[in-house]
Amino acid sequence: MKNILIKGPSKLSGKVKAQGAKNSAMKHIFIPLITNDTFVLENIPRIGSTEKHTDILKMQGAKLEWSGRNTLIINTKNVIKPQTVPKELLYFTSDANKVIPILASKFGKCLVEIDPERSDRGGDQIGSRRFNEIIPTLKEFGIGAKYKNSRLIEFYLNSKRPFKYKSPVSSFTISVLALFSALFKKGKSQISNFTLIPEFDDIVEFLIAAGAKITKAEKLLQVFGPVQIKGITYKNMYDPHDLVTWISAALTTNSKLTIEGIEYEKMKLQTLERTFDKMNIGMDLHKFTARLNPQLTSIKPLNIYAGQYPLFTSEWQVLISPLLTQIQGKSEVIETIFANRMQHWNEMAKMGVKFEFFKDPKYPEVDDNPRAVKVTGPQKLYGAKVDARDVRTGAALVIAGLAAKGKTEITNTEHIERGYENLVERLKSLGANINYL
Image (cartoon, rainbow, N blue to C red; front, side, top):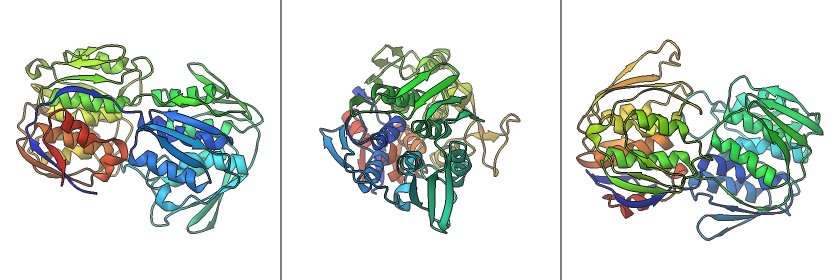
């Protein structure tokens, strides 16, 4: 993958549309495997993560076709036997493992290839997300696992009995694994303490629209299996993290920008709006659009705990980090979920950013990785060669590069491409001086 070169500082102007949500789309692509029918998925972002998930479906015998830019047609009528999921696809995203409960439950077993030298689940390296952690979790849902050898694990259906499960933490991964497993059980499964993030809501809505009998209350999800779903057309939600990327880019560069592709209620933007109101952002947020005409000198610093909804989202604290360097006053951010989601600060330090990591007793460091930071602005940013260590770090560095004086070169851009569709071209259309080398 080519490096990205930004010549700054850049001003943005015009109109941009948020892309389809990455974190729901990756699961939506697996849902057609539950049955043998044709599905039409709209608003699917053409990013590295979704492309690799389509490769998993093709290996299982599904036929896929893109119609236009973002509509994906999936035909699973020829999916009659599970095929081994290779390690190249398993580790490309941290979500590839979500296909396991579907294949193991539908066919009785499935094989996945692992790398014995790796312990992670793939995707972003932002904390303890180990592949072997899903084995005891799936066991709770009647799916066992055994090593065929050091490189192959067979997951098998151990029980069709419905289950009652209370997740020890409100985890997106655990919630999806539980949901996908429950779809095949004979009777009513109950899941509590499931994640409240909007992308999970969208997955449940897709399944219900396709015919699954699921009831969802505030604290209890009930799945009546085995579900009988049929092929439908479904529109994936818009991406709240892409939205915040554009908001941060506009604010950090003090640029006037209009953002479309907003679904205020579905995207659960109340926390974002409340936080930005406290910061005096001056964003005009409507049901379907956001308009920004920022005045950096009027924006107030931020003191926040970041985590999973209803908190200010973990991804967002990374994305607004460049903004915190440009506003007057001291901001503090504490990350409550991921043990290693402050990597972007060390990269921005190469651009001249001064900050201080500190210890928060409520959220202790893991493996000496900082989880809390203080930064005082405004500061001057200077172009430098920096490393996109994960998806959101990459986006934050792009934003910082837009505000920096001089040339910023970003390496490891495949991480950006995993999560963002045509980010460089979209920025160029808004006036940014940005290109691939």
